[in-house]
Image (cartoon, rainbow over all chains, first blue to last red; front, side, top):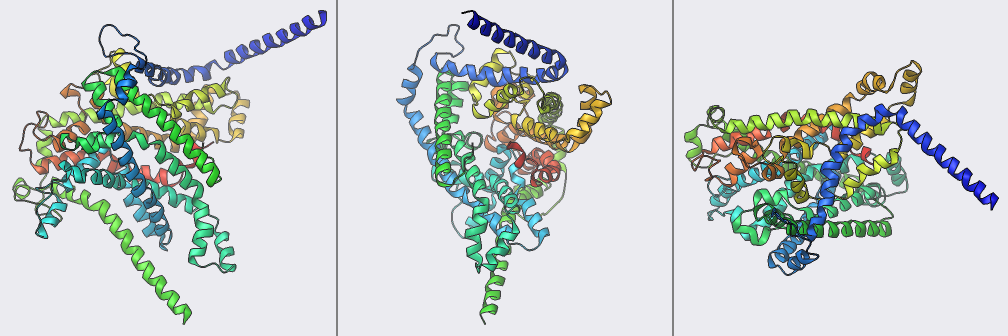
Length: 315
Length: 285
């Protein structure tokens, strides 16, 4: 009895000395902590308060004076709404097309650029293809709208030169998704390429020499040296792409119009319109909550897949 | 025999490869060239029909027209928000990065977790809108700066750079009796100039390119930015902001050029930092 209380005392003593030490450290480091303060306040206001705001998905918040808790009402409405289902479908289709057509391109381009002997040309190509990545979606959308304009766009001039009628691409549901994917590629292909080129330059050149000694041909080296060398980058890029799958947004918001809503309205644009134009804040947040949860599952799933089949954990 | 055939196929490959990469470059550059020459064309040339690859005239009339119209206000707004925003962003990012880079910082793990969690869980735009609305920031220039002032990515990159500064440099300063403030100002900042330059550029371009935040937070036409003006001119040409129908193509393209201008001017510097791998590897670890 006596012994245990003694031990407890000691533990307590140790704890108080620990907290005392902690506060002593805090006092000693008050300058460092002061430097953190503005940033921490920013994080609380603009990152953590919005996270708390996600709970509004369970209310009928819409700038009416009274807000009441309505449980899963918003989600029930969500899953029975045709607009939501169309938006979900469009999001999946557009993201799928983006991944299938965009994803391999930077790898191919980087491999081609790696074959260039002249460093100058390699730098020049890299310099050029990387430009559009720094343009906003408004600029990229405007570039495409200008090039595809039925009256003065370069594409339609070519079509007319072959004797066909001009196509109003931006308002044609059959073309719109292709334009979205095309502009996605135009803007982002340089970014991916630069990353792969940088990774390729880190592949140990003695491995190539060893492969040559072993009698490996061009494709043998590609398969046994180059691709394993960029494997982890491929996995990381895939994960990044997949984590953005449901977040197609600004591109569509800039480029779409009423004529192509049926093929281009995505989850985020739907949430944007519901929240800001119709003031259905609670409902709009339930859409983003749904999106976040699915994204998280996708990311975890991809990471599992990558761990299992590529021996690379990304997270 | 075998060898020459190998050489031949190699030569064909090299030529095809070169052509292929040239084609890719042309696809990127051609639209930009078209936009540039249209922006300096005379009105009669852009009205005469398609204006494509060969410039027919050179005049800065479209640009003077912009400077004499309401359009220029949105250009100035973008510059103002970009400059003030970037200064503000750096003013909160540098000190926080410096503190996080100190290995003996109390509760360092907690603070890092506080930052990293926001990279994984993002509430999205509508909750942010609710916060901005409740802070009564709607329709203020502050709403274009505050909600997007900090980037966790930039913060972590800068912190990692500052962590990599040799310990001995800081230790010897401490032995000379320097306190944390002195170490920050006379040792860490001068050494960190490359990363500070890079992140300044990133912040500026980020502010300049903002679009949907502006749509969300601003509905006063006088406070619009150039991105909003450009979007309206190109996609809703007959709306009130555009000034009704009949805006000449050269004027539209001149606005687009002005929208690209800062990015094009800063691009060589930005791409230098990115290509050197400064940003790529540094986010890990």
